[in-house]
Amino acid sequence: MKLFVDENIAYAKFFFEDVLLNQFPNFFELTFYKDDEFDLEKISEDAAVIIRSTYKTHNLNVPESVKLLSSVSTGEDHVDKNHLEKKNIPYHFASGANAKAVREYFYSCLSILLKEKKFDKSEDKILVIGLGNIGHGIAKTLKNFNFSFETYDPFKASTIESLSNLEEFKIITLHVPLTKNPPHETYNFVDKNFLNELKNESIIINTSRGGVLSESDFLKFDNLTVISDVFLNEPSIDKNFHQKNFISTPHIAGHTKSSRFDMTKMSLEKLINFFFNKKLNDSLVKKPYKKKSIHFSLSEVENDLNRYGFPVSLLLQIYDPRNDKFDLIDFADVRNAYHHRLGYEDITSNNDLNVSEYLFELGIE
Image (cartoon, rainbow, N blue to C red; front, side, top):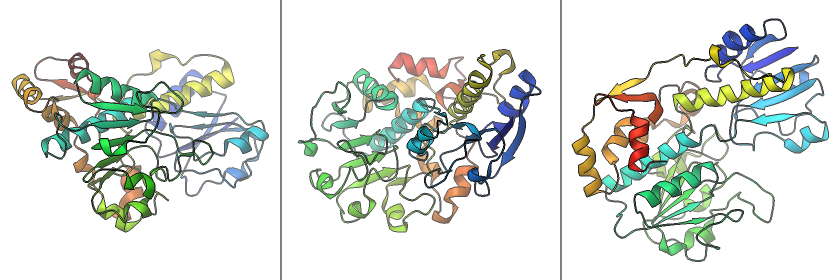
């Protein structure tokens, strides 16, 4: 059985070479590939294929020799699921594996907006659109810290049933899949009609997918702000949209060391379960990186809670998305080489505190 794995998948060699071939040494013939050189249609022998979100299967005639197509991405719009289902080719996504990392990205963005006085906790309101693993956790955190907020999701219990009062919200954060299927199409979901309803100086945070927000429509509005981690037609990003964003990052909101480790691990677990009906041998899986120790003051956290109602300095010390700005031409290279960001569970402290547990006790989900 052939096994083709994108060489730019985080921890690919660790999981698919060191771990998989140790547990099942003689079953797979492993090949690492470059996704811009890989041709899925030319696979002629029985194979499993592991891809990233950068590899699009639409308009490809995937051969039936592909016995499993697994993506380490949590998004699904890069895979033509209808085509695979018609050919009875199983597929898999790393659903939910990066939810915590995306939530952490949002908390850092919120911290910036609080510190720069672009959002006033005592006066302004947040709208969370989409209540999956990401949006639900954000809503719980906002509640724990007594932010004023509403939630909207046509498929789940929400605090509002329609988007008829968008002018109430200073921050709108998007956590929806990209779909072109009515009646709940999200392509160009945030269009000129949506934008027209917003109050002056409203801020949209998009960590979902490029295409959910109409970039061409947004460029016509000078009174609104966008923080965007995702873009239409990646990696060929619109220059004007990129320049107009308050913060732009290269589609890495879900990419902490721990989340990328978990995403690749999930693909390996699916592979082992699919072909062997067994579980991954966890004794072989030890994170191949060390936690980082940071120094922070508990009194500073207390001061921030009193001043901003949120531990802004600590969150920005752990991760500041402004440090991940990028030049337009470098989008793909920067994203492919992005392996340095630490999540809450990748951090220890000078106070002998488990930082992740400490933040959870404060109310961070």
